[in-house]
Amino acid sequence: MAVITLSRQMASFGDEIAESVAEKLGWTLITRDTVLNRCFKPIVSKQTYQLLQESARFFLNMSEDGQTYRSILVDSVKSLTRESNAVCVGFGSQIIFADCPGAIHLRIEAPESVRISRVLESYHVAETDAMRILQTADRKHKRFVSILFSTDLSNNSLYDMIINTANMSIESSVASILALQKEHEIHRRHEEVLENHMASHPDRPLIIQNKPNEKVFKNESEEEFARILDMYQIDWVYEPRTFPIEWDAEGNVTLAFSPDFYLPRFNTYLELTTMNQKYVTQKNKKAKRLQELYPGVNVKIVYKKDFESLIQRFSS
Image 1 (cartoon, rainbow, N blue to C red):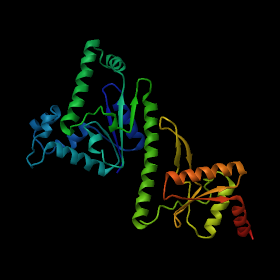
Image 2: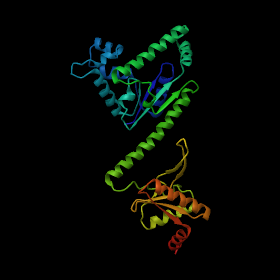
Image 3: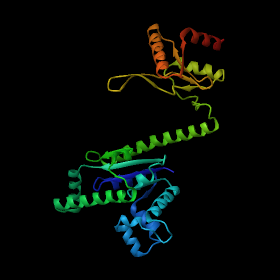
Image 4: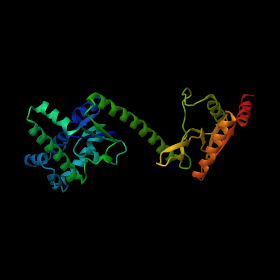
């Protein structure tokens, strides 16, 4: 299940952005009306349906089957997203899917002055009326999430991305969201692979299997060394971790060390040094500092003579 939740201010282009994202991804668009029509209309009376449309607090009442309408809302939305990937707009979906690893949470906003201009253009009303329309919409959106989920929807920590559409078009906003979704999907699949691997091999980290023609190395020496490891059937991971080793007064990382290889069987990181003595000295200092800061992390330097000896043995 993959879900994008989208919270939006009125006149922020949030609805238009949600529709476009759903269309481009081929996902189902789920709005508050979708949930009410599909999940409540068939099972409640006309009077109850109208109250659900108009009152956030009514969702806290008990239904005939002993559940609150809030519980039915949450269960129904989750059921809909099990049927297909979905873009959920509003109705507290960012709270409903807060703990879902397959979810991305978005907030679409714009300054009040920009939103007033858009309402004036869309509704052809006086400016005072435009302000009143926005205030009512904002209050109702906030009230719904507050009453049902005891959460302030304007809390930025709820969202993975907040887009201000004052100077961003619908198209550029959609492009940003699609890029985030693509990156999120890659990360999610990697996490699934890692979880599956750790379930079957809890005593060792994931071994990255590089494609034969995939150029992942920074230089020929690293590629040659990887071939030697493969020849001896030694599992390896290329640059799996970066260790911060120096910080400035503000806490910003100013120097880090990324060992070239990790050998899971030996729980050891290796750093190749096939360059001149100046760089060898620098790497030795980094390795020493790393071990001071991270006790238990084993780092070995592979010097040029050792590397050349291995190459000679491998070539003969």
